[in-house]
Length: 168
Image (cartoon, rainbow, N blue to C red; front, side):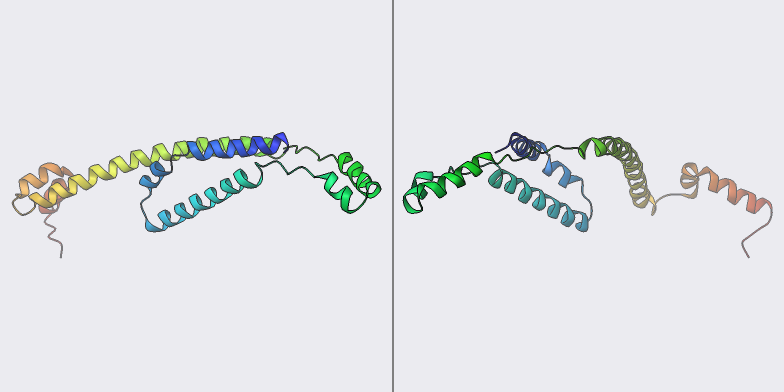
C-alpha cells in the first residue's frame, strides 16, 4: 500500500476517535437536527470503516510458480516482467492547500457564532426565568409591585392619565 493512503486512513481513524459525538449530540435542539446529525455520524463511520478495511490491506503477493506450472515459463515471465515494471503514481494533494485557509476561516467564524449563540442563550434563559417568576407572582402581585419592575410602563400610564387620555 502506498504511504499516502496509509497516512490518510490513519488520520481518518484518529479523527474518528477524537470527535466528541456524544457532546455534539447533547447540544442539538430539534428532532430534525438530531436526525441529520445521526445521518452524518453514520456516513462518517461508513467512510472510516471503508478506509480501514479496503485501503489498509496489502495486496496478496502473486504466486508466479503456480502460474508457471499451468501456463508456461515464457508467458508468465513476460507478465511478471511487466507487472514488476508498473509504478503506481503517488498521490499529490494539491487541493487541501487551497481549501485549508477557507476551512480555518470558517472555523473562526464558527467559534464566533458559537460564542454569540451561548450569550444569547444565557439571555434567553434569564428572560425565561423572569417570565416564570412573574407567572408565579402575577395572581398576588399589586400594581405597585409590577410597576417597580417595569418603570417605563408606570411612566406611560401616568402620562396618559395626566393628559386625560383613557384609550378611547
